Image (cartoon, rainbow, N blue to C red; front, side, top):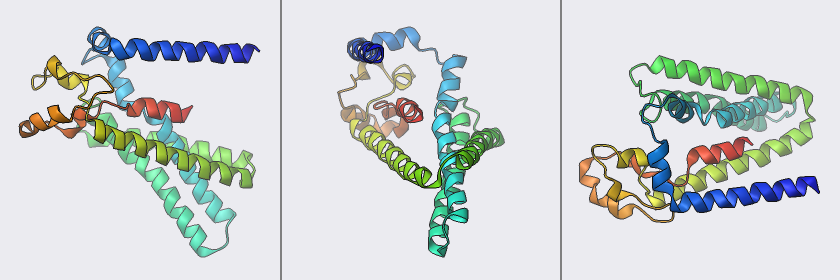
Length: 222
């Protein structure tokens, strides 16, 4: 009963947050947005790190499963390729997020991003090795496949929806090229605004505010 009550409370709080955020989105952003806020920059730079750790963990698990649990050469090759991608892609994406304009904006220091990416991916590799050692192999395979499918589908849905919605980011609205008049609610498309500003060479990433990739990543990590 206690668990059911806790679930209901969390659900109601979440619904209330969605309602308040839907109608006071602009006002909340105006209160909370600080372009050089260290907390915000840190979350933007490494906020997706948990899912990259998970990707790397799945990568090393794939390699270990292929090496120790499968004898056919093509099975090993497939798992090795998937595993290598799971380990290497987080290094690139996490490194890029850390130094790009959305993060700490230090593009000339690519090696810093590389170090951060290696650390995040390395943590995932260590986690994957641990999980492989303590888990039943058959259950681990089923878990691996299920998790991989969920991650891929959710990321694809988010990215496709971002492209369809074209909602401008708040940081763009308050930039010298933007205006608060361009603000859109989350259910409104910003395609007309994007088309109107197409000649201004505004990066397309400035029109990918909804849905939130960081929120999606947080949900996946949980």
